[in-house]
Image 1 (spheres, rainbow, N blue to C red):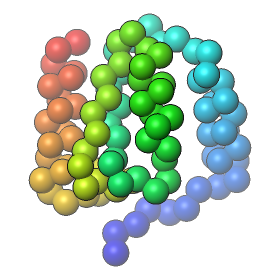
Image 2 (spheres, rainbow, N blue to C red; image 1 turned 45 degrees about the horizontal axis):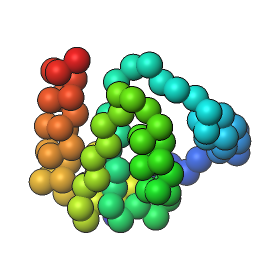
Image 3 (cartoon, rainbow, N blue to C red; image 1 turned 90 degrees about the horizontal axis):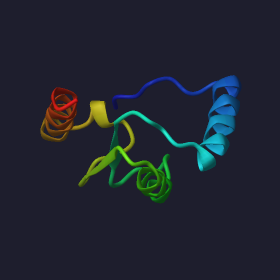
Image 4 (cartoon, helix red, strand yellow; image 1 turned 90 degrees about the vertical axis):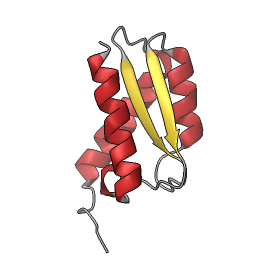
Length: 91
């Protein structure tokens, strides 16, 4: 029942342009990528491929999670936030 608003065409177009530019980009800062195991919006394989091309990327997949990770069940959301805070503390 919990839902955020839909995307605009401008947002979607900008997203596709940015995604296309990621193929050759190398990011020089640490990255934390939280991946929802049961995501039907984002291509998890693309997330894994991106993370493997980056030297400082850390990708973590959350079992049973769907697209809106911060709107998940408490145990999933708390785990994600804990992992993110730990990532930040190690910077």
